[in-house]
Amino acid sequence: MKKYELDMTQGSLWKQIWKYSLPLMFTNVLQVVFNLTDIAVVGQFAGSKALGSVGSTTTLVTLFTGLLIGLSGGINVLVAQAKGEKNGQKTSQTVHTSALISLIAGILVSMVCIIFAEPILTAMNTKPELLEGAVLYFRIYFLGAPAIALYNYGNAVLSAIGDTRHPLYYLCIAGVLNVILNLTFVVLFQMGVAGVALASALSQCVSAGLLIWTLLRSTEDYGLRLSRLRISAGITGKLLRIGIPSAIQYAIFQFANLFVQIGVNSFDTVIVEGTAAAANADGIIYEMMAAFYTAGATFIGQNFGAGKKERILKSYFISTIYAAALALILGVSLVFFGRPFLRIFTGDAAVIEAGMYRLTVMGLSYWVSAFMDSALAASRGLGETTVPTVIVIMGSCVFRLIWIYTVFAFFGTIASLYLLYVFSWTITAVAEIWYFARLYRKKCR
Image: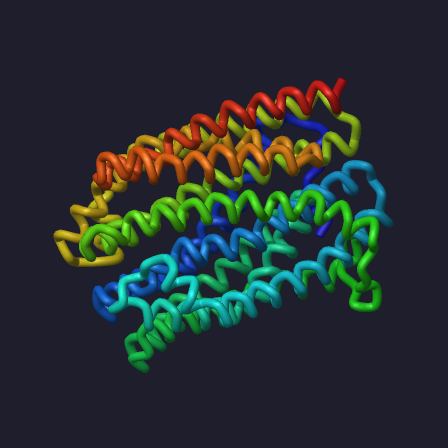
């Protein structure tokens, strides 16, 4: 495993951050592919109704998986800081405590999603003709929530020590399996939305199992030993102090998006289905950008632990530049090549045109979000997430709700709904950058 580790406290940051982020970028995209493949398969082989059912759950799926991803962000920072300090005992305690916390969190998320699927989806004004399929998909998908939690735990640990390749290898295996199972369950056994949900849950179990197996085999201080599994109160406190606000950050974005989805659901079925198809681009681009945010937080965490304060600010600027440039390139590409992308999910010309409208607005806006999320990640790398979370709540939740009930309520157009993203990103970015600048001066003087 040594050859996969990366010393983030020395060497060229431009080269190291790119080398670190590239495998992570593909890993993040493959996680999105689980849901994306589900939508593509049902859209092509089970019809528009099944497409709408699965698409209606996209925001909720992202919300609840985001809770688990946010928790893993805290794990990543704590392991990175301990590694930067070269404190083997602290690293081991963090790894073993985090494993149990992650498993518990996954089980809780699974229970909540299974029990409350129907009332939540009903409250979102899911179309009556799509509700039964959406509830079925959502419940089966989140049977795999413990596996999602353990995968993100393992990914966080390995990423913290610089190994972003093993998670990519294992997710590639799971991704291929997911496609095979999707086609088998939907085309061969005619299982519809239940088939694609089951395929995702099983594939997630495989990727999680491979990562846990890797940690069990490791002889390093970040290796996992079943005999050492216990919860350390000190580590748990630090993990929850960083992880819970990080999880809330993910949830807040999606909670606000639930109200956006309610707004979308007020239009006809064509726009609902077109939006569901186009929204798949969000996941791909956000997750590719997120690789640089993870890199920024991890590099900042290791260098903060090692006392290399001059590299902290450089890590922030470089990861921000990479993320914004990537988003601009991909977003503009979607404006020009969006129709072939949408045909992956539907052959309906009207749905494609509705989807293209969203792709155009969002494609020219994605890059703005880099300045917000990069500052969030940088503050997390320094071990602070509470104030950034409050800023997110105000800028990306409260502001969006105000926009929906004022600007959107006044104009009533789909364009006025889509534009709230770029305005909320801009406001939140200004506040997050201001806070990180203050935090840096305080901790890195």
